[in-house]
Image 1 (tube, rainbow, N blue to C red):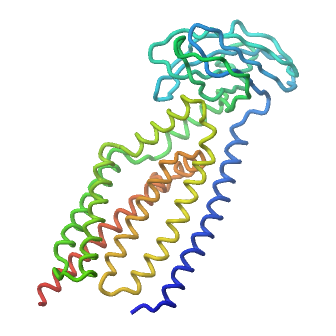
Image 2 (cartoon, helix red, strand yellow; image 1 turned 45 degrees about the horizontal axis):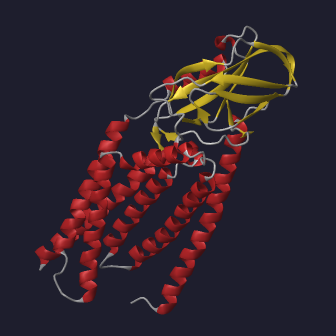
Length: 369
């Protein structure tokens, strides 16, 4: 029997672990975010504009250039994208290339033409000795800018600085394509199918374990059966949601909603807080769950299943925040498999194995009786 002192120590240990993980996770996320921003931010220009872009009206950009080593030709144009945020093609140009030596402010006006599926535009600005995109020496693109039709357009707000990202030069682009071609990637459809099978199987085994529990009517026994049934339901619902890719769909819907309302940047603190909080809570639950599994003889496998479910759900929720540093970490692969998805799968597999072990234990107990 666990005394009050042991319970207090477990709670204190869990809270301490949660606090340490919260601080460490926040530091890692902040460091990755800063490095990614500095790496992707061009240092040779800043761009200001009034958002949103309105169909049928000129979209004006003010470009401030840093000093350049020599004369270059600068070109500015708009590209458009549909709801999936994938750049579809060129929309319009600000006119012929202009010669510049840097250290000046240039204004560009680009007519926003109608495209039926257009939801956003992005301004692309580059330097080239010939004025051709294929010969660019530097390039940058703005954040995705929401598009409004005439009936949706409101009063234009004052200009603000736009978030800019570096555009790869032809040599950098070729190197990136070569690197991507050489990377080994696991088929995402197969991985998703395996995850769905593991989740549904784990849910079914948890349901069977709930049925095979002692049928006594005391409160502890009823709670155990309810816990097995509840965890089984969570795993089955998770398997169904994974089948239809619901987590990624929710993430995409939320991203588009923020972008359309021009509050995309406002979600960054919320994303970071959600991701770090999920990591801290997960750490506390893992400490508590692993400790309980080690101490408990009768319900060890139930606690182990709970730990697996916590790992799977927490990693899924952290991924759904779509926080850019988290997305960067998600691209880290081990033997061609994303470490992020490997952790989700490990949690699901742990739940499946623990449920199978618990079911086997109940069968052995029934046979021995």
